[in-house]
Amino acid sequence: MTVATPEPLVVGSPDLLVPPTGEFWTDDESTKDGPHYTVGEVAKFFFAKGPDWLRWRHDPTPPPGKTKADLSHPDGWFILDGERIEPRRRSTHHRYYTLYDIERMAHALAMNGGIDGATLVKIIRLVKTEAELHGVLATQGQPDADVLLGKVHERLGQQGLDIQTYGESGEVIVRWKRSYDGVLSDERQVVGTSLGDALQQVLRHEDVADEADAKEAADG
Image (cartoon, rainbow, N blue to C red):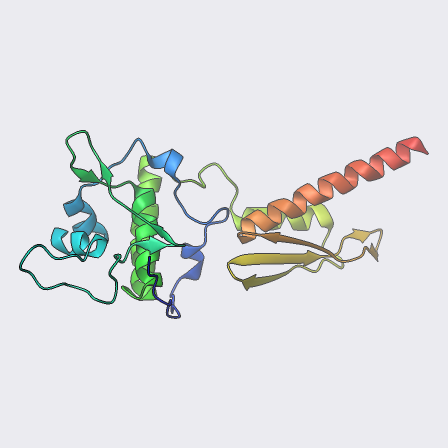
């Protein structure tokens, strides 16, 4: 399969593209039972296009006697991380999509130069809103990054707390020092798939450290 070299994305609202945990706002398990969308619904509502546009983005191979629509993407536009995103099929063989499919399709289209970053943000906003309305948001019931950050500050203390985040290859690195009666510990570090994931790791790390300290104190 051929995957185009991604162009840099200029995104107006990057926080919308990165959920507090995980890679996407939706997942296959939460969305497989619905809502489901037809080819026409996906093309019109999420991409502001017609159904033929969507079909050709999946498979640019022309019917007999027709000119090929897109020589630059012979395997289609919907390829993400080397995986081709295909429409699902009902028992009647009609195509349909879940919100998880649509979210990944939008990212694939952006990575392959089919839409710009601002358009991607608009599509992800629609996906996220639909997921919230139907109660299938993958992050529902999970604390967001602001809540987790507040818990980290409360847990570690403000004095001497140093949290730094860096984004490289989609990863978030959090470095911090904990204050023990005004004395800072050695620097600690975790790597997460998102800020929320990394902050949850910080709290789990400190849980383990507290348990070890309590055991040491109990052992005298």
